[in-house]
Each structure stands twice: as C-alpha cells, then as structure tokens.
Length: 106
Image (cartoon, rainbow, N blue to C red):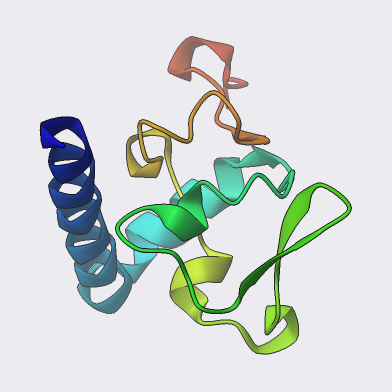
C-alpha cells in the first residue's frame, strides 16, 4: 500500500511540475520535444500515473486513447524530457532522449 501511495504522490508532483512548465516555461517543453526520439508504444503507463485516465481503453493488447485526435496538450507532449518520464513508465516507454554526449555538436 505504501508503494502505491508513493507512486501516486510522486506522479502527482510530476504532473503539477509539467503543467507549470507548459504554462510558464513553454520554451523548455518545446526544446525537449525537439530532442525526443521514438514513438508511443501504447503501454498506457503514462495514462495510469496518478489515476487511470477515463479515456483509456484496451485494443489488441495496446492501451489507446478514445479522444486521441483531441486529447489535451499535456498528454500530447508526454514526455518532453528524460526527467519528465514517470519512473514506472521508463522501461516500457517508446520515447527516448539522446544523452548530452550523443548530441551532434554545432
């Protein structure tokens, strides 16, 4: 029970932080999205962070969004950087970010 509580609290803190960044530090989000690689694999771990999203449904082993075309910006931009990834989702997420040493030099 304590582990579930810690996951909930940590995820909630992360969600508050990312909403702050999206509203007040938009350039941070945009810079991170420019570095993001990969694609969503439909694991649904981000959609089950603090609570299960009511628009989440399972289809052929993947968790999909019922409102994919009109889903909120906060969902479309997940994750915008390595630190934005929920710890419990990292192993399953199809998105990644190059390490700073892997980035091409200008």
